[in-house]
Image (cartoon, rainbow, N blue to C red; front, side):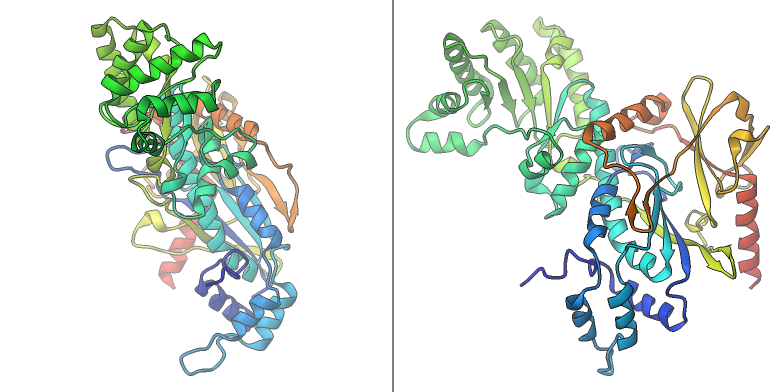
Length: 511
């Protein structure tokens, strides 16, 4: 089986192509259109839920768009498709148009920049351009941005839970195919310090991290070297980078004592050991006992790496248990916690508990007769009725400098210049409030990242992406950051946008 078409412009859904041919037949294929990409609800992991999300995935999408086009191979493949009667599914004139114009260089994208905090129902991405091209982009855009945002959000929650502790991502073996590379990139944006994924880590400019698995100890034992022999061999190969997995046999009776023997030998040779890794059992209890043994042997500073199905809630529980139990064993809890390193794999790269972000891509405006006409769809569920029109998004900060609301307006509105800003809940007419802009700081959220296919912003490095996340999270109310039952962050519509939406709903219901 080949992968000839899987990574190019045919990385889309069939219905995008069949709809596109209908647009072509109607003469609408080059009509300027506007699509919004947003998610309706934050990730909910079952026992706990997020109160925010972190945008990620734009750079991989733009890189894909740079080379995605309908070449001879793609046109040839589409020409072989047949309808139910055996007739060609796609006509030669439509395919000819795709051959000539079917790349993504005529699209413009505005977006909330990668790394920034984003909120439900606020468009993260706005795509403008010829209807057919904007339509075909839907599937790859949702695929890359939804997944990356999902993982960056999970990583940000782990980062918040782990505090200042080193946080490693090593989910490559458990991730969904090549999506592991997107996951690693998103995890690094979301707060992971580094990753075991060598290629993806190097592409992001960070040193990959890793030590050894149980198989090294098992091999040594099968050959009669024992656990101690395995540790000695590893230390001989990496005397200044020795971090030993100590739970293959018995953590406290074998693993840690043997690690200490190796550490003592390294110390006599002038080397400083890095630490141990715990991958099973009661990690809080074992951390305390291992710290006590290492302290007694004169190694109070070596790291204790924890792994085994960690996530933000498990890390929080481990730290809570250590704070309660460490003093019973004569240890300072903060000293134990300070030396911990968190290795997070499966639960991070699969977003355990919430496998997909419910991001959608909706047509909100269409150019007709020298003007943009707002578009809307109705649903029995008001949450699924998109907000129409060409819009701008603003973040409102209160007198404390805390983000208090995201506000959607029509794109010709300037809320910071208003004397009073009337805000409406997106779906509940009974929820309204008025803000005085003079008492608040109002920030425009969108930046143009692609202008008619031309990149207009520099590619940010990882440090800048992380700084955006850190800055935005620091300005959220602590209640929104809670791991469990977070406070609701307000998203509102301006009065003009609210009225436009309600008028369109009435008109559609009449028709």
